[in-house]
Amino acid sequence: MPPARKRVPRRSFGAIRKLPSGRYQARYPGTAGLLRAAPQTYETKRDAEVFLAQIQADQSRGDWIDPTAGEVEFTEYARRWIDERGIAPTTDELYRRLLRLHLEPTFGSQHVNTISPAKVRTWRAERRKATGATTTAKSYRLLKAIMQTAVEDELIRRNPCSIRGAGRENADERPVATIDEVFAVAEAIGIRWRLMVLLGAFASMRPEELAELRRADIDLDTGAVRVRRAAPELNTGRRVIGDPKSQAGKREIMLPGFVLLDVRRHLQWFAQPGPDGLVFVGEKGAALRGTTFGRKWRKARDEVGMPKQFRFYDLRHTGNTLAADTGAKLKDLMVRAGQSSERAQLIYQHSTKEHQRRLADAIDADVRRRHTSAVPGSDIGSAGTVHRLVRPLPPPAQGARRR
Image (cartoon, rainbow, N blue to C red; front, side, top):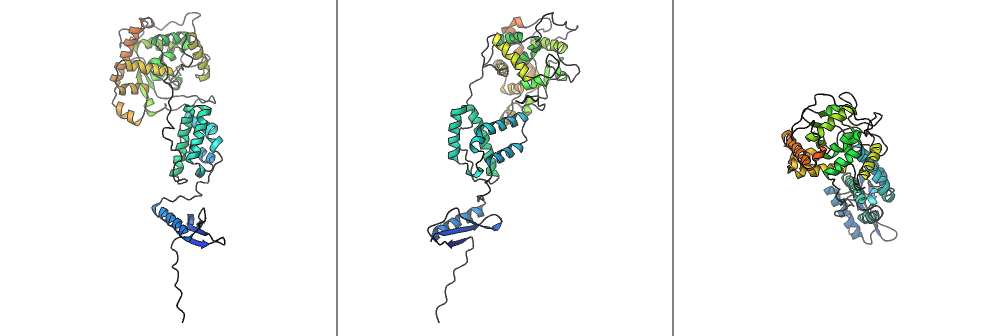
């Protein structure tokens, strides 16, 4: 009786078969338990067994990624990523512009799982030559964030954006105006917009915060401005009314005493009526438009000889620098400027209104010392002392600049 044939034990994971070519094909259970062929064939059966062992180990550890899961076009995935963020309208507009102009031309039609570190490096090098370092850094940060979500969604195993420091911007330091330049441009821009310049510089307010400032936000008794809302203007011209740039943007700013006469004049002459009336409006009484004000700002800036690269927003840097020169603590400076980060919140969360009042008074005293001609004496006493007007202010003289 011939000896019984030795039965080959049944494979517990996957399957291996020999092809007519003599090479071996390995198949393993993928999604829903269906057998999926390995991406290549193997010269020996042993090589195929090693592949199956690696797949089995990855699946048991939870490290296995379905190779077809990432077969989604980058454009489709990136647009859905932006839709799901719940971000501010201005950030949404920025992301979509970066995606359209700088990411989609290269990665748009590629599958997410085919974007490799080598492709990212090549794309970054090309972008730096075409658009410069700052725009490339912004685009890289967006790409990295999208691909990191793809990792979390188990579409890819690793984030291909791994270039150290590629997302950092090394923008030039913004210019700072002198006190005399601030008052000169405030005079040149006309009496209607003078207060906007002064609040941008000496209260460190953002343009979008000034655009949504209401009468009820100003307390003349205490000399304070409450920032509660902002109205940034998108590139389409649409005003988006909402919260300030960050949670810390909601704040109360103590004004230097020398600004209060301008505040009273502006409220009497130009602001919309009623507690909810806008403080800054155009000549026809409509809400402030960035394009219209921008033309007036550039004309006044050029008239007084300030650098062309000096933006209205740079007045904030002037105000922040002036406040820092008073010797104020960092936490008080960040409260005044409405700056926010997790680390910063721990630093300045205990800042009090009393500290803010002292900071405003210090700015008032410093400006009085350095630019006495700009401080009217009829309404303001010594630094920190606010006098209320008894009689209504007369309107501007005939022919005064009310642009």
